Length: 194
Image (cartoon, rainbow, N blue to C red; front, side, top):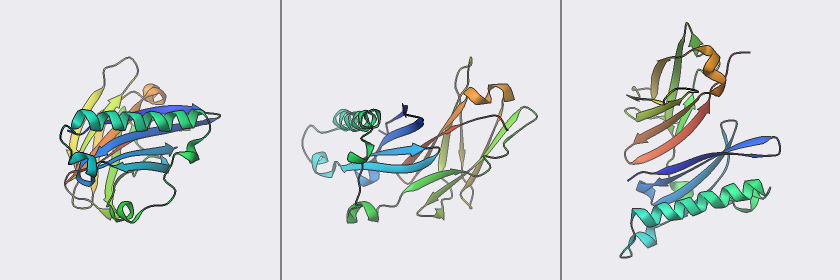
């Protein structure tokens, strides 16, 4: 079971996006903190030892992840984010391949009531073909819209949606990429062109 949490929290003039997910293939509970789409830090704990214990399952993983997510949110609110982030990558964490999702055409995506996003999935900087992308469009005054697609041989996938430009400033896209048991989730905020 793959589960996670995504929360936006403001401290001072900065809005932080905090996302936590269970990385099943690495047996990690990971929380990443983003500012304007750039990862500024993370906290990760292994549950490999706990997984071997009787009675440890998805409910316990979810609670540990929820507690870690809450810890990071509280640290941001108190201006103490640096105190809870991992500062030295251990050899174990450094060896883990990580998926990433980039929004390739963020500067020019809306024309003639159509929103077209080009997304690229990479792992350690290399393109990931056949990654499954699940996208959730959240719009004002409308139910969320979901779509799925696969990346091509270059790690690129394109998604399109009919959307009025006036609703862009209040809309967001949550993208989850899954490939060979690894997953990454990114939230992109939409805005009108200047």
